[in-house]
Amino acid sequence: SGDIVRVPMPALTEERRRELIKVVHKEAESARIAVRNVRRDANEHLKRLMKDKECSEDDERRAQEDVQKLTDRSIAEIDRILQTKEHDLMAV
Image (cartoon, rainbow, N blue to C red; front, side, top):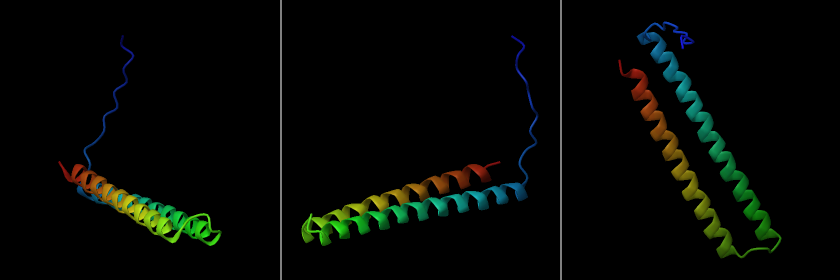
């Protein structure tokens, strides 16, 4: 016992909160870009499979729709997390 180190942290100022929100927005945008890049790569892979006759047009279209649904869900989740974090940062 007695091994606890306490470090006093000053409360966040309004200016610092706004700076942190900007950082959170940048991170969220980076995450959105990463999701869109994965979607692009998946669609390119599907097109190659179609070109090489390894899947039918219907399979390609269905897979692209699935990829788009996953993309939409992922971006919605990123937006939800962003809103929550923004709210947390602005709460005093």
